[in-house]
Length: 479
Ligand SMILES: Cc1cc2nc3c(=O)[nH]c(=O)nc-3n(C[C@H](O)[C@H](O)[C@H](O)COP(=O)(O)OP(=O)(O)OC[C@H]3O[C@@H](n4cnc5c(N)ncnc54)[C@H](O)[C@@H]3O)c2cc1C
Ligand code: SF4
Image 1 (tube, helix red, strand yellow):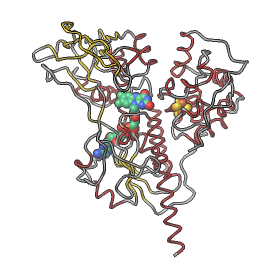
Image 2: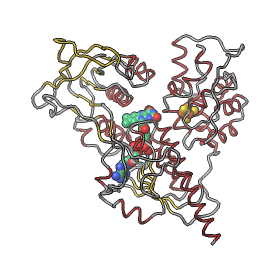
Image 3: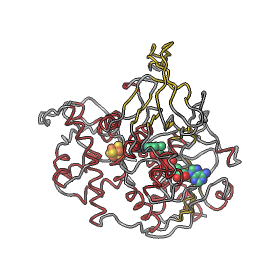
Image 4: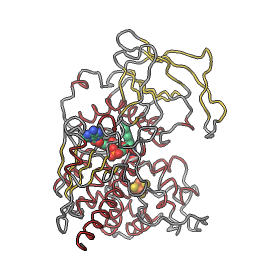
């Protein structure tokens, strides 16, 4: 990983671009989803003041060398910009599309901080790599020589794929096991296609397969093959299984038809976009068309659900969240996007149960207010006595977050140490777990997190494995 620069106070350069109002800044953020010409990329890139203290770089989990590739883009040297950008990021065109840049690189851009509107780093990153694919600059994976070591990766999400890429480029024999029929993890079946086009993900899967990575799909580790068997077959194993246990809601009527989990709803929508047969979508069970939709939750998954529901033709879409706008965990940019698309946010509301006999007809809602800050400084929601009502709904989507599955029990491997939250314990630098030769990366270690962090973990775990393989090869040669 590139050295992280020391942070220090930085003076805003005098030749700063003119201040931008809130609407223009929002448009800047949204450039990611617009047609993007070379001139626009160069214009944005040239707005970088080359401030000398790259907060953007230090707030990017991959420490991408942003100022330098912006400079190259501004000078029209796109191929060099691409080479630099891909040196630290396995999937720059994916991060460019779906990183919450307002919380990472762009939110810490010196120009943004001074109120002049961020340099749209994500859009430029996406543009550079999309152009590289178009122009044939993205090279196939062709290891200089094959190595004898083999690695088994459980989970074909961004963490597993990033590790596979690093290992395969060094000639390691890599097999990825995934229980789904397509690789990509949440890139494929979680994140909606209007944020991340599926051909962009499939292109990367193809690149890995053509580079010699073996995919064992439709293979649930713990059911179709045991964890022990995988350990036996490979010199090292990476667990990158993500977190898939949805947090649930109880209360009266919780079992009624029409109350669904966000992951099922989004997966059905994504499968439909692949042209798969999805009976639950066709029957209307997982389809918002013509329905009054209520989404419960305030994170980015909830935002994906409300925005998918509006696209499917829901008659109304409301989002219930128990805190207020300022205290919601999701990206403010996503909330603004959803509002512009007609979603109504009902802040300070907590579900108590559901109305309806067989089919849901509404959510029993308790109005809340924010009380005194707790030890963490966050205001806890409190019930307003007597302020409850029913929010009408034909489809209720529960988007309350995800927890890890109990892997030690599922895999019969009690020695695999987990935290009290059920995430796997792994060394923060090497990502090795309590089991020798077994590494872990991404959400299964961090809890529900971000694609860019999974990529970073996967890359670092692969590098740690290579270090070990090399050390072993050297000691064998010396004997
Ligand atoms: C709806 C939604 C939207 C999101 N949007 C964004 C976003 O816009 N930007 C962002 O940065 N992050 C977003 N995230 C978070 C991001 O997707 C995750 O942090 C990231 O995908 C984690 O990567 P991973 O490789 O750890 O796991 P995953 O992507 O979850 O992949 C894990 C893989 O492991 C497989 N697997 C699990 N168990 C087994 C088993 N026993 N045997 C075989 N295979 C198994 C799964 O099938 C899956 O393919 C979103 C998450 C969700 C749910
Ligand atoms: S990887 Fe994400 S955080 Fe890093 S520069 Fe790209 S968009 Fe920004």
